[in-house]
View 1 (cartoon, one colour):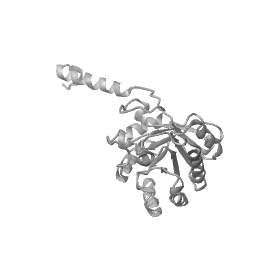
View 2 (cartoon, helix red, strand yellow; view 1 turned 30 degrees about the vertical axis):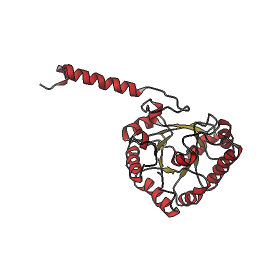
View 3 (cartoon, one colour; view 1 turned 90 degrees about the vertical axis):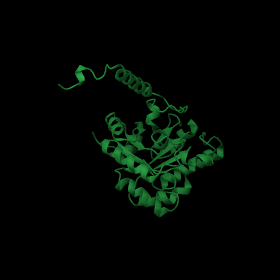
View 4 (cartoon, one colour; view 1 turned 60 degrees about the vertical axis):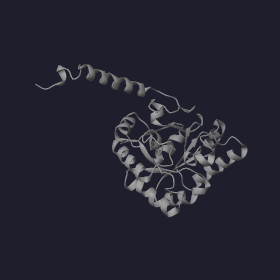
Length: 266
Protein backbone atom coordinates (compact mmCIF):
# COMPACT_ATOMS: atom_id res chain seq x y z
CA UNK A 1 0.00 0.00 0.00
CA UNK A 2 1.09 3.55 -0.75
CA UNK A 3 1.91 5.52 2.36
CA UNK A 4 -0.31 8.53 3.14
CA UNK A 5 1.42 11.93 2.91
CA UNK A 6 0.47 15.59 3.33
CA UNK A 7 0.29 15.88 -0.46
CA UNK A 8 -1.92 12.81 -0.60
CA UNK A 9 -4.30 14.34 1.95
CA UNK A 10 -4.57 17.51 -0.14
CA UNK A 11 -5.33 15.38 -3.20
CA UNK A 12 -8.02 13.51 -1.26
CA UNK A 13 -9.74 16.79 -0.46
CA UNK A 14 -9.46 17.93 -4.08
CA UNK A 15 -11.21 14.82 -5.40
CA UNK A 16 -13.81 14.74 -2.64
CA UNK A 17 -12.56 11.60 -0.92
CA UNK A 18 -13.25 11.63 2.81
CA UNK A 19 -10.27 11.31 5.16
CA UNK A 20 -10.37 8.91 8.12
CA UNK A 21 -8.49 9.58 11.35
CA UNK A 22 -8.50 7.62 14.62
CA UNK A 23 -6.40 7.87 17.76
CA UNK A 24 -3.85 5.19 18.62
CA UNK A 25 -1.59 4.84 21.64
CA UNK A 26 0.20 1.48 21.34
CA UNK A 27 1.84 -0.87 18.86
CA UNK A 28 -0.90 -3.52 18.66
CA UNK A 29 -3.73 -1.02 18.10
CA UNK A 30 -1.70 0.98 15.59
CA UNK A 31 -0.97 -2.17 13.59
CA UNK A 32 -4.64 -3.18 13.60
CA UNK A 33 -5.84 0.29 12.56
CA UNK A 34 -3.16 0.60 9.89
CA UNK A 35 -4.15 -2.73 8.38
CA UNK A 36 -7.79 -1.59 8.45
CA UNK A 37 -7.07 1.27 6.05
CA UNK A 38 -7.14 4.32 8.36
CA UNK A 39 -5.55 7.34 6.67
CA UNK A 40 -4.25 9.20 9.74
CA UNK A 41 -3.31 7.87 13.17
CA UNK A 42 -3.33 10.55 15.86
CA UNK A 43 -1.39 9.88 19.03
CA UNK A 44 -3.64 12.20 20.99
CA UNK A 45 -3.04 13.69 24.39
CA UNK A 46 -6.41 12.07 25.10
CA UNK A 47 -4.20 9.18 26.18
CA UNK A 48 -4.16 10.96 29.54
CA UNK A 49 -7.81 10.06 29.99
CA UNK A 50 -8.20 6.74 28.18
CA UNK A 51 -4.78 5.20 28.92
CA UNK A 52 -3.51 6.87 32.11
CA UNK A 53 -6.79 7.41 33.97
CA UNK A 54 -6.42 11.19 34.30
CA UNK A 55 -9.41 13.54 34.48
CA UNK A 56 -8.24 15.65 31.52
CA UNK A 57 -5.32 16.18 29.15
CA UNK A 58 -3.51 18.93 31.08
CA UNK A 59 -1.18 16.66 33.06
CA UNK A 60 0.10 14.79 30.00
CA UNK A 61 3.84 15.37 29.50
CA UNK A 62 6.27 15.28 26.59
CA UNK A 63 7.69 12.06 28.02
CA UNK A 64 4.21 10.48 27.98
CA UNK A 65 3.60 11.55 24.39
CA UNK A 66 6.98 10.47 23.02
CA UNK A 67 6.70 7.08 24.72
CA UNK A 68 3.34 6.31 23.11
CA UNK A 69 4.32 7.84 19.76
CA UNK A 70 7.31 5.50 19.50
CA UNK A 71 5.05 2.50 20.08
CA UNK A 72 2.55 3.62 17.45
CA UNK A 73 5.25 4.35 14.87
CA UNK A 74 6.46 0.75 15.15
CA UNK A 75 3.01 -0.60 14.33
CA UNK A 76 1.98 1.59 11.38
CA UNK A 77 3.35 1.28 7.85
CA UNK A 78 0.81 3.14 5.66
CA UNK A 79 -1.03 5.69 7.80
CA UNK A 80 0.15 9.27 8.27
CA UNK A 81 1.24 9.71 11.91
CA UNK A 82 0.44 12.83 13.93
CA UNK A 83 1.58 13.47 17.49
CA UNK A 84 -0.31 15.80 19.82
CA UNK A 85 1.90 18.44 21.41
CA UNK A 86 0.91 18.46 25.10
CA UNK A 87 -0.06 21.44 27.21
CA UNK A 88 2.76 23.98 27.70
CA UNK A 89 5.10 22.24 25.24
CA UNK A 90 4.65 24.94 22.58
CA UNK A 91 3.17 27.97 24.35
CA UNK A 92 6.18 29.27 26.31
CA UNK A 93 8.31 30.35 23.35
CA UNK A 94 8.78 29.80 19.65
CA UNK A 95 12.17 28.23 20.32
CA UNK A 96 10.70 25.75 22.80
CA UNK A 97 7.88 24.89 20.38
CA UNK A 98 10.34 24.17 17.59
CA UNK A 99 12.59 22.03 19.79
CA UNK A 100 9.70 19.98 21.18
CA UNK A 101 8.05 19.54 17.78
CA UNK A 102 11.34 18.32 16.36
CA UNK A 103 11.47 15.60 19.00
CA UNK A 104 8.19 14.13 17.72
CA UNK A 105 9.74 13.57 14.30
CA UNK A 106 13.31 12.82 15.32
CA UNK A 107 12.79 10.64 18.39
CA UNK A 108 9.38 9.01 17.95
CA UNK A 109 8.78 8.54 14.22
CA UNK A 110 5.86 10.92 13.79
CA UNK A 111 5.26 12.62 10.45
CA UNK A 112 3.62 15.74 11.89
CA UNK A 113 2.46 17.43 15.09
CA UNK A 114 -0.90 18.83 16.17
CA UNK A 115 -1.34 22.03 18.18
CA UNK A 116 -4.42 23.65 19.72
CA UNK A 117 -5.20 27.32 19.30
CA UNK A 118 -5.56 30.17 16.83
CA UNK A 119 -3.76 33.41 16.25
CA UNK A 120 -1.87 33.26 19.55
CA UNK A 121 0.21 30.29 18.31
CA UNK A 122 0.83 31.50 14.75
CA UNK A 123 4.50 32.41 15.34
CA UNK A 124 5.18 28.88 16.57
CA UNK A 125 3.28 27.32 13.66
CA UNK A 126 5.20 29.47 11.15
CA UNK A 127 8.54 28.54 12.74
CA UNK A 128 7.78 24.83 12.78
CA UNK A 129 6.57 24.67 9.19
CA UNK A 130 9.50 26.80 8.00
CA UNK A 131 11.81 24.19 9.48
CA UNK A 132 10.17 21.22 7.80
CA UNK A 133 7.75 20.12 10.50
CA UNK A 134 4.19 19.60 9.19
CA UNK A 135 1.61 21.11 11.56
CA UNK A 136 -2.05 20.19 11.99
CA UNK A 137 -4.17 22.88 13.65
CA UNK A 138 -7.05 22.38 16.08
CA UNK A 139 -9.87 24.89 16.61
CA UNK A 140 -13.27 24.98 18.29
CA UNK A 141 -13.38 22.98 21.49
CA UNK A 142 -9.71 22.76 22.43
CA UNK A 143 -9.39 20.49 25.50
CA UNK A 144 -6.16 22.12 26.67
CA UNK A 145 -8.18 25.34 27.13
CA UNK A 146 -11.01 23.62 29.02
CA UNK A 147 -10.75 25.87 32.10
CA UNK A 148 -10.71 28.99 29.97
CA UNK A 149 -13.68 27.77 27.93
CA UNK A 150 -15.66 26.78 31.02
CA UNK A 151 -15.64 23.09 30.29
CA UNK A 152 -16.35 20.88 27.31
CA UNK A 153 -18.85 23.04 25.43
CA UNK A 154 -19.76 23.65 21.81
CA UNK A 155 -17.84 26.62 20.39
CA UNK A 156 -18.67 29.14 17.64
CA UNK A 157 -22.39 29.54 18.28
CA UNK A 158 -22.37 33.34 18.33
CA UNK A 159 -21.49 35.45 15.30
CA UNK A 160 -18.34 36.83 16.94
CA UNK A 161 -17.16 33.41 18.09
CA UNK A 162 -17.80 31.89 14.67
CA UNK A 163 -15.90 34.71 12.97
CA UNK A 164 -12.96 34.22 15.32
CA UNK A 165 -12.77 30.51 14.45
CA UNK A 166 -13.04 31.30 10.74
CA UNK A 167 -10.27 33.91 10.88
CA UNK A 168 -8.07 31.63 12.95
CA UNK A 169 -8.56 28.81 10.43
CA UNK A 170 -7.47 31.01 7.55
CA UNK A 171 -4.51 32.32 9.55
CA UNK A 172 -3.33 28.80 10.40
CA UNK A 173 -3.54 27.86 6.73
CA UNK A 174 -1.64 31.00 5.72
CA UNK A 175 1.09 30.18 8.23
CA UNK A 176 1.67 26.72 6.84
CA UNK A 177 -0.72 24.28 8.55
CA UNK A 178 -1.41 21.30 6.28
CA UNK A 179 -4.75 20.33 7.90
CA UNK A 180 -7.16 21.46 10.58
CA UNK A 181 -9.24 19.68 13.22
CA UNK A 182 -12.60 21.32 13.95
CA UNK A 183 -14.06 20.08 17.23
CA UNK A 184 -17.57 20.69 18.57
CA UNK A 185 -18.59 23.57 16.32
CA UNK A 186 -21.94 24.06 14.55
CA UNK A 187 -22.32 22.03 11.38
CA UNK A 188 -22.91 25.05 9.13
CA UNK A 189 -19.77 26.79 10.40
CA UNK A 190 -17.60 23.72 9.84
CA UNK A 191 -19.02 23.22 6.35
CA UNK A 192 -18.40 26.85 5.45
CA UNK A 193 -14.81 26.80 6.69
CA UNK A 194 -14.17 23.52 4.88
CA UNK A 195 -15.26 25.08 1.60
CA UNK A 196 -13.19 28.21 2.17
CA UNK A 197 -9.93 26.48 3.05
CA UNK A 198 -7.65 24.78 0.55
CA UNK A 199 -6.29 22.45 3.26
CA UNK A 200 -8.41 19.55 4.53
CA UNK A 201 -10.55 19.81 7.66
CA UNK A 202 -11.05 16.89 10.03
CA UNK A 203 -14.23 17.08 12.06
CA UNK A 204 -15.17 15.72 15.46
CA UNK A 205 -18.60 16.84 16.52
CA UNK A 206 -18.59 19.21 13.54
CA UNK A 207 -20.91 17.46 11.11
CA UNK A 208 -20.46 15.75 7.73
CA UNK A 209 -19.37 18.86 5.85
CA UNK A 210 -15.73 18.46 6.90
CA UNK A 211 -13.24 16.73 4.61
CA UNK A 212 -12.72 13.93 7.12
CA UNK A 213 -13.65 12.63 10.54
CA UNK A 214 -11.76 11.65 13.69
CA UNK A 215 -12.80 9.63 16.74
CA UNK A 216 -10.99 8.44 19.83
CA UNK A 217 -10.40 4.71 19.33
CA UNK A 218 -11.68 3.80 22.79
CA UNK A 219 -14.95 5.63 22.08
CA UNK A 220 -15.32 4.02 18.64
CA UNK A 221 -15.06 0.46 19.95
CA UNK A 222 -16.77 0.95 23.32
CA UNK A 223 -13.76 0.68 25.63
CA UNK A 224 -14.14 4.00 27.44
CA UNK A 225 -17.25 4.17 29.62
CA UNK A 226 -16.85 7.32 31.74
CA UNK A 227 -19.04 9.22 29.31
CA UNK A 228 -20.04 9.10 25.65
CA UNK A 229 -20.15 12.44 23.80
CA UNK A 230 -23.09 13.11 21.50
CA UNK A 231 -20.85 13.04 18.42
CA UNK A 232 -19.55 9.50 19.08
CA UNK A 233 -20.85 6.49 17.18
CA UNK A 234 -19.90 3.23 18.89
CA UNK A 235 -19.20 0.54 16.30
CA UNK A 236 -18.72 -2.21 18.90
CA UNK A 237 -18.90 -2.94 22.62
CA UNK A 238 -15.42 -4.37 23.02
CA UNK A 239 -15.35 -3.53 26.71
CA UNK A 240 -18.23 -5.93 27.35
CA UNK A 241 -16.59 -8.67 25.28
CA UNK A 242 -13.30 -8.27 27.17
CA UNK A 243 -15.00 -8.28 30.56
CA UNK A 244 -16.93 -11.44 29.67
CA UNK A 245 -13.74 -13.15 28.48
CA UNK A 246 -11.87 -12.37 31.69
CA UNK A 247 -14.81 -13.42 33.86
CA UNK A 248 -14.94 -16.74 31.99
CA UNK A 249 -11.20 -17.19 32.55
CA UNK A 250 -11.59 -16.50 36.28
CA UNK A 251 -14.43 -19.05 36.47
CA UNK A 252 -12.45 -21.73 34.62
CA UNK A 253 -9.37 -21.31 36.81
CA UNK A 254 -11.45 -21.32 40.01
CA UNK A 255 -13.36 -24.48 39.11
CA UNK A 256 -10.30 -26.28 37.75
CA UNK A 257 -11.45 -26.60 34.13
CA UNK A 258 -8.48 -24.58 32.90
CA UNK A 259 -5.88 -25.63 32.05
CA UNK A 260 -7.32 -28.79 30.51
CA UNK A 261 -5.53 -31.81 29.04
CA UNK A 262 -5.07 -29.98 25.73
CA UNK A 263 -3.16 -27.15 27.42
CA UNK A 264 -0.44 -29.16 29.16
CA UNK A 265 2.82 -30.79 28.04
CA UNK A 266 3.52 -34.52 28.44
